[in-house]
Amino acid sequence: MALPSDFLDTLRARVDLAALIGKRVRLIRRGRDRVGLCPFHNEKTPSFTVFDDHYHCFGCGAHGSAFDFLMKTEGLSFPEAVERLAAELGMEVPQESPEARQSAERRRGLADVVEAAARWFARTLKAPAGAEARAYLERRGVSDDLIEHFRLGFAPAGRNGLRDALGRDGIDDAAMVAAGLLVAPDEGGRAPYDRFRNRVMFPIMDRRGQVVAFGGRILGEGEPKYLNSPETALFHKGRMVYGMHLAAPAARQAGTLIVAEGYMDVIGLHRAGLAHAVAPLGTALTPEQIAELWRVVPEPVILFDPDAAGVRAAARAAERVLPILKAGFGLKFAFIATDTGDDPDGVARRYPAQFLKSAMADALSLSDMLFWSETRDRPVRTPEDRAALESRLRRHVDSVADVSLRSHLLWGFRARIRDLGRQRDRGGPAGRSFGSGKVTGQELGRGPRRPAAASMVGIEPGQPESPAQTVTWRREAILLAVVLVQPDLLDTVGERLGTIGFTDPALDALRQGILDMAATGEALDSERLQSHLRRCGFSASLACVLDGRLGAHAFFARQGVALETALAGWEETFALYRRDRMRPELQHRKQALADDPSAEAYHIFQALKAHAEAVPAVRDGPDSDGREPSD
Image (cartoon, rainbow, N blue to C red; front, side, top):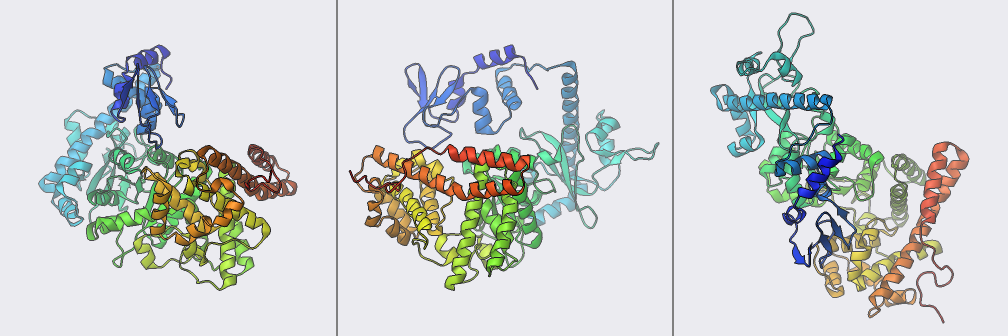
């Protein structure tokens, strides 16, 4: 909704920006302004400055007004941020037009109706009529505190229980039909009747905690087992997730968000101490729901059962996110399996919370999930198998709109396929990890591990055979050696190091280990970082990367080099590495354009070409790997 500019200016001027930001960031006065540690990136010295009417971080460039701060830190939309600030200041948000006012009034009216229904369902659960529903919830381990926390209720079996109760409060049938509480028969002359009957009721709330709809679980036999409210002016099923109003604050604190399959799973996870859990509303995740999750955290974790249905649902979620995938955002995937076949709610009741937390920590990345889903039921033994696998993976990659992401995904998949071929040629062990497409129930029970290099391909880190690959391997090793010797550079180069996947799986695992340690926010020096990585099992990779012979190709990766010199060498090596890694994809797209000179193929090729040409020009020739010039 467009709001009058004078209203926005007045609201912006009345907000005490320092007080608003000070609720989340510890600020200290510096002259007229205030400074603190930036909430949008990890930093050791304050570079986040709050002025009278805006904030600016001189470290990461974050910049904005009070509205921007609420949108970024709390995942609010612009209208929601305006509404929040206006409410705190006692200002009324003006309506855009008479029609908009009528629509808002209608929504407020429906909100009052569903809130009245929620209160009646809650009272009925506590009444004698709710005894069977209370027994069901008790069997599922739902305490009275959880019942209150999620506002659970009960809809009795009669056709007119809710209708009569709300009618006595002056709410007419038309309002209850519009709110999705009554069903209006198609046959004329018949009275509306209650939509929810003999069901445990789960109020569905928006981000502000206001009830907008319901889900109902039938007691005993009957279909459907779960029934949701229909689409209304308040409720759009494909845009909302269950439990977000409770999960969002916990998710921002935990840095992650768990997406389970159903209402009871969410409640069970809350009972286990994982309050950052939500669920889609009975359907596969939609792009709108994924965008809603991304407003809270950049990489939520999908937690489904490891049965065929759960794996299919996870694979569908992976496919659906690809067209809207963007840099810095994605999905992770975790599976839990037990001998008793429990879902997340059952696991939360039967097992220690650490069981679930371990599964979350070992969640698969989006690319891991796609690779596994394409290899888990298909043997990859021959060159023909590997070609078919690449074709299937390419179909996924081609649906990604972002050119850079598409290139990185394709490179990563090709590297894994090559690793499968090397493993086959070397007679390596079959099937320990997702690289082979085999995962045992026991492994799923622990939560699938991230495919670490040595366990995935059964080889020690080392230089590949061909000269071209040797140059690529050397550059990957140099990029890691520099940050191992100069960890302070991670503040500058860490984000770029995190956007690439190395061709050598052992080096890629070491790269991830370095980034994981940096993400803790602890102060790092070279000795401490290397000691930590050795404890994590990276001794062989470290010995390879820190071999003194590598210094012959990269003088700036040696101990004692000035930080500025090391950074300049890293930047040059990274530019060369990116340029060379983009060449195969550029050649492929060029050939695709020749085979199919369509407008789409042309635009893809031009976009990729422009991206490649944007890589900074660097010197080439004998010293292009960063070796110290001979003169």
